[in-house]
Image (cartoon, rainbow over all chains, first blue to last red; front, side, top):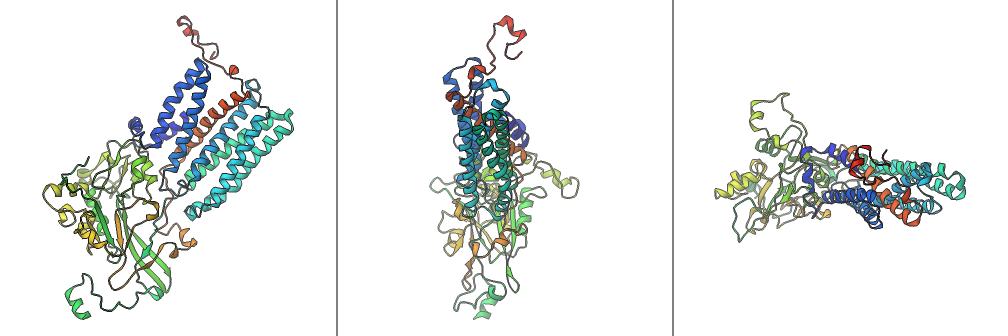
Amino acid sequence: MAVGLFCVFLKIGRKLRFWRAVSRPQTSWMTRELYAVAVLYPVVLANLLWPSAVLSLLGGALALVFLWCQAKILHRARGIPAWRVPLMPWMLVATGLLEGTGLLALLLARFSGLGQPGILLPVAGLALVAVNAALWIAYRGTAKVEGIVPLARRVIGDNSLTLHIVGHALPALMFVLTLINPALMQVYLGVAGVAAIAGGAFWKFTIIVRAGYQQGFVVPAVPQRGSGTRAAPPRVQGTPLRGAPTRMKAAAE
Amino acid sequence: MSEMKQDNAHTPRWGMVIDVNRCVGCQTCTIACKHANDTLPGVQWRKVVDVEMGEYPSVERFFLVTGCQHCAEPPCVPVCPTGATWQREDGLVIQDYDLCIGCAYCAVSCPYQARTIAHDMRWYYGEETKQEEAVRHDDRLGVAQKCTFCKDRVDEGLEKGLKPGVDPEATPACAAACISSAIQFGDFKDPESNVSKLIAGPHFQLNAELGTDPQIKYLYTTPAVPGRPGGSAEMDEERLSDPANPLVGPLQTLWDWRAAMNWVFGGIASGFAVMAYLASLAGAVYPDMIPRCTPLPAASWRSGCSACS
């Protein structure tokens, strides 16, 4: 989180004023994200010093709040059609949980003493992969109806196969293999973790950086003038010329 | 809340009416805006989009004057984390350069491409001229900027007893300068104002389906020649996929890879925290095996805790 927020800090135009971003919790999800972090870090630190079930629960809940804030930040950016669709917050939450599962799988594969994945982790991973894949398919399928512009839809379409292979199929396969052959669990979980994280990072980068086309201008009505079939029709009889010079009015009469 | 003096009984609702039939695309409004607001090269608060439609020989061309629409429901206001973007009682959406941190959230929230951020000073002739030096706005660097409906002209005009939309001195520079009176400014709440009378007939708002209720309203008919429906009927998928089409939105560049990293790392970390907690509840993770920093007596501080060392 800190690394991500630091990257945002590098992006803002007036870095010395960054603290002002805490000013609008009433309406801004960006401010709320900062508040979530500001509470989460002390809770995590306190839980490291004085472990307790309450602090663990609080930490988990605050992390979920942070994840939701991130999801809403992108969703509220209404100038970008690819971001503002109703599915976006759910996609970001589901992906965050899958990436988190991936990191957990990676750590458990590397440090076996930290825990025993059993069947719970691979099953949870499989479920999250399924949810993520379904959300992506729905996102792509409803893109046109939701008003995502063609240029963004092209980017989404061009990158779907890569996402499905790296972010969905590969981790799903590895989680299944973990269930089938627990003897090689460490290898499978490690690959599943890396793939889940890579897939999530890939689509977020794609949507934010490459599919972030701005809303164009929808002109619901146009003047009738031009040439050919677009030429103005014969003048409606009896209509006065609006604001025309006197001599033109006289000529028309 | 409002900066301007106004009659308590009547708070105006400033807005514009732009007659697409009258606009000839002369760009006088864009130059007047630059002159009045001293915007940098490449920064245009007032834009005129040159639209060409159809295929030869059935073609049509018109000009669409755009900029900040001072929406009644501005998407840029609630997202601002600092309160730098806010709305006055008279409807003008204001940008406070001293509060803005330049996060660009307002810019990606605007469906009218009205906001921009200039990070560096630029000059029209390679180096700073005396005129540019006299009117430079360092406070606008690194922060969001956009059309203000020339609020200073409006407010100062009102203080002098002038009527915005009628008296050029109290009217936004673009409207005052328009050679064909295509841009009209006025109070939508006053039924006798020029803008209220003009929108009595057919008119439209840009991207109205987004629910922003923009306060620039466009006329597209003349008494003699009615307009015709535009929208998607006018543009097929191929036209909408053409980056050279001025009606197609460009790729935003304000939120780049650095912004994306926030979602990548933030998602991984927060997702991990949630899943690790759930895994510990299920017994898949042994919390006791996680290295911890245990509080030490003061005498042991120099040697550090056992987990860290």
